[in-house]
Image 1 (cartoon, rainbow, N blue to C red):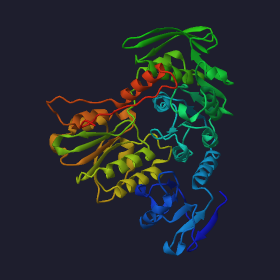
Image 2 (image 1 turned 45 degrees about the vertical axis):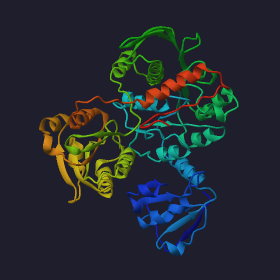
Image 3 (image 1 turned 135 degrees about the vertical axis):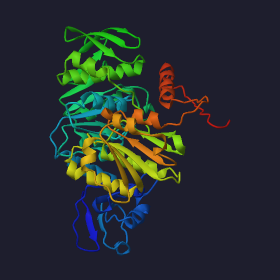
Image 4 (image 1 turned 90 degrees about the vertical axis):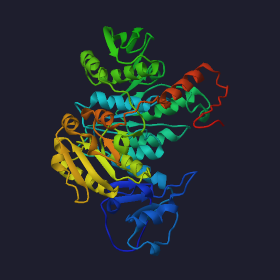
Length: 475
């Protein structure tokens, strides 16, 4: 990093967690705080807050009065973001495993999450939390790598030239996935060709690049799909319905791929995922079997009204430590004044030994002010030892919980529902939701964004778009 060390006393620390937000302190003793400077904020303003919460290791780019922070150590660097990325790149270099790097104008997170669902039976997977694909998010994603992981899924997003080189240095993908090249972030590039070349920098050194023609076909070592004659998976026919049937040839062999969606974007993303599985050696029969179980991906934590005056936070599609921390932080931001409850499943995605991993979960729950924990699964029941201030209930499976759950079990509580996909915690969400007999209008923001992109694609590049969002009043 080219750092200058300043410490108020002799000490050494084992760093396990990287922070840039003082509100997210969970493990102060083992955290390293980066005072990041952005156009909107200066992280040096929050060093004192992090120190008051117990953090004692900091990376800064401005000299601070060390005597004001007893016990603290400061690494003074020219650029704190560059230092964070250097650390992530070093960490990535310690691992030799398949790494799938995903970029494109749209669909990165959907493809990443679907690849996770499709490949989870064979691999212990680490992946970017939600849409962590920025200069900061990629560094934090790569830092999650642990010795137990056998596959990594990282997404990379850019908005201007020069950004991908730094992301590629941290991700170093062995397999590249390009979802598409669309109009998103066009304003940062002089042409689509410049944007394509910039995104292609992620794949330098990758063994293969997978995605649609014509963009992927312009890259070396590609496996492409499309109706073009040069595509590796050449699409001959698409029959849409409840299940979309795709007739194709893969290197001269007729195949049929069955996608459980009908909209154009989902079908394209599913074909890209299928090509990844083909490259990894999966049969078409296995691919179709896995595709049939694909679940739509909700990109956000959902707040819902629960029975008994409860507030529900639905995060029922993943269970890894980083996303748990994000969900606990989200719960802490909800000023409901209610006791905090979590419903957790086994953490199948940790990549760490249970006896080392679950004590971290216990500390995270305690630090978030959780008062009740409902634990579903045999592993979490066996290994998660909670402090006395957190009451615990144990269930062997989701089915057992649903059978034994009764209406008065939860009352006036804020409940975080977080489980690994095999546990199908959406059934618990449905059981705990308020039963109402009034008309409710739900707005699908992902669908609105998709519609906007579709209309934008029909317009000339120089045509500007103004969008108005109408919520509770007229503007």
